[in-house]
Amino acid sequence: MSDLDSFDLKILSCMQENSRQTAEVIGEKVGLSPAATQRRIKKLREDGTIKKEVAILCPTALGGRTTLIVQIICSCGGEATIETFKQQMTQVPEVQQCYYVTGSTDFILVMTVKDMKDFDRITRKWFFSNPSIGRFETIVAIDTFKEGFSIPLGVAV
Amino acid sequence: MSDLDSFDLKILSCMQENSRQTAEVIGEKVGLSPAATQRRIKKLREDGTIKKEVAILCPTALGGRTTLIVQIICSCGGEATIETFKQQMTQVPEVQQCYYVTGSTDFILVMTVKDMKDFDRITRKWFFSNPSIGRFETIVAIDTFKEGFSIPLGVAV
DNA sequence: ATTGAAAGATGACCGCA
DNA sequence: TGCGGTCATCTTTCAAT
Image (cartoon, rainbow over all chains, first blue to last red; front, top):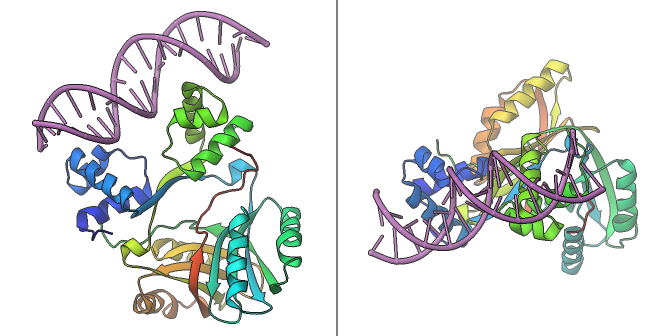
């Protein structure tokens, strides 16, 4: 992958904020012509620096969601167990994020469910019937703010 | 906000996956003409169902990041303390997500830092000098997969 | 960096339930 | 009247110079 100059970083910063801005608008902000901006964006997309562009939906518009943080302790810590578990979590749409972590627990999940009944269904299907899971603890998010994945780039735009 | 029919849900599902698809492509998938699809997307953007569209960057392309999960226990649990803390966290770009939670801790943060030196700097600035923070525990993510915020919509496209 | 061609989005209008 | 379809126009993108 390419090394990024300050123009690239500024473009990425803009795109992280709002990917619907035209090359012309971004170019204006970063001090580049529309065509040059476009070329750079194209390259950043092609080399994978920009992984993808997605729509962020409003949870309340979709009937509201509950966010849960689940800490999981595996019953046995073999390589295979971990890989299997990772692979399984990839299939569960309610699992937003999955971290394999240091400390007294093995995995931390961030989940979003319609309601606790929904959560119950998922735990039965994926956790209770799963021999690699020893125990899990669920924390309910009362309020969630700052939902995002913007990587701090340290440039002003 | 509007109530969403199955066309809308399918469109949203497509947009969550990849917001760069043209109305023509999405229309084909959901069974609508390009213009009708376009009209619906426009409406979903205007009424806030689609909050925004953003670029997801590749962490490794940006020199690699370390993800941390930080559990925070406030020293005193007043309303003002919580609001102040929320407001402060909003200002820290390295704080990706911030959850106010049930259980033995008050907040759980998901952070992304360049390295532990970077984390040290942030803790000094925002945590140690913060009277409302009693104690905090840091968990390091060895591996992070399934980074995302896609809301499960329960429709096939 | 400019320009011209192709692609996509937007808006007007028609028709159907 | 509301919503989808078609067509014409304008904007944006993309490639070649």
